[in-house]
Image (tube, rainbow, N blue to C red):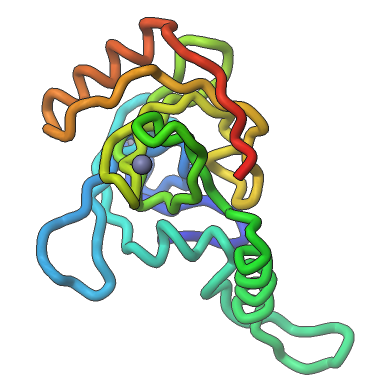
Length: 200
Ligand SMILES: [Zn+2]
Ligand SMILES: [Zn+2]
């Protein structure tokens, strides 16, 4: 589940019990088969204990909770009435999206252009070989090809923070899950990145 106050996902660790991680600490995401409402994603994440653990995250928690939707109630000091932070934050997010400001974006290599996206389209994440960047494999919601982008942590973790430029691997990679993981690691450390503007 997502903790809006800490802006982190609360997941369980066999060593520490409970741990809270940012989205960029996720390593793999895979939608579980079945028409569950909401859909559930099997994920693995890099834990502060040094290990990688599996977890389950609901679709809403992945895509909507970081935008403040479902943040719950608070007490409004201006009106002395209980308010709903989730509703107000949700409205702010919705109006920004309507204005063309997207919470997340990526560069689709196959289509050669930047695109809006939600975290449920991320499939693999890993620390990049350059500085503190993060490699992310994204399945394009439109053409369904997979691209690898090299982005900042903030690009992943902070909704509406989009890097002005991202690294793009000049390669459309396999949809096959096992091969994809291997290929992702190879491409990520090949250093063969091109820089693209991410202005939508
Ligand atoms: Zn752990
Ligand atoms: Zn595409």
